[in-house]
Length: 155
Image 1 (cartoon, rainbow, N blue to C red):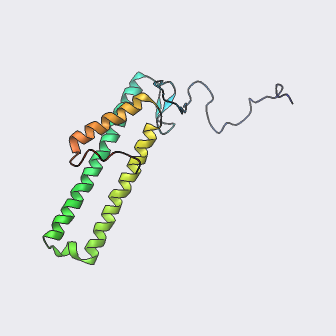
Image 2 (cartoon, one colour):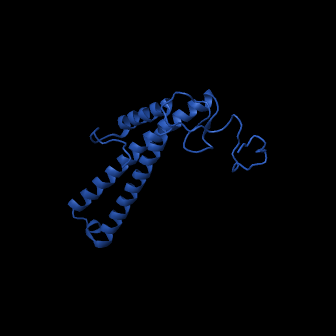
Image 3 (spheres, rainbow, N blue to C red):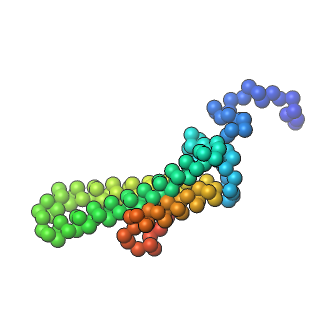
């Protein structure tokens, strides 16, 4: 059955602009930035300046992951010091519950953050991947107190 006579002009494409300025989804490694969208369709790279700003934003986001990890480590150390010092608020049932809730919140933020970084990396764009690596490098220089064997893995 031929479909050559069918008019597709009136079809609704779900609000997608079918012109040249659409997000491309790459499943193979590329350095191409034409129609690059980073995670959201609103984060659309349309030129050299928006690419530079986007790469800086990706690096800052990745740097922020190390900051969250460091804040989590500091909180844990402060809680451990309070328990060792015998402060009653850290040893009460309510105090222990509060510590557990805050630790769980830090954990949830880190998991969310790491999955978001994974989505950035999954643009399969070499420039974005380099920005993630640069942000991890900067974040570790600024905030990394622990072992460098801990990675920004998904979980």
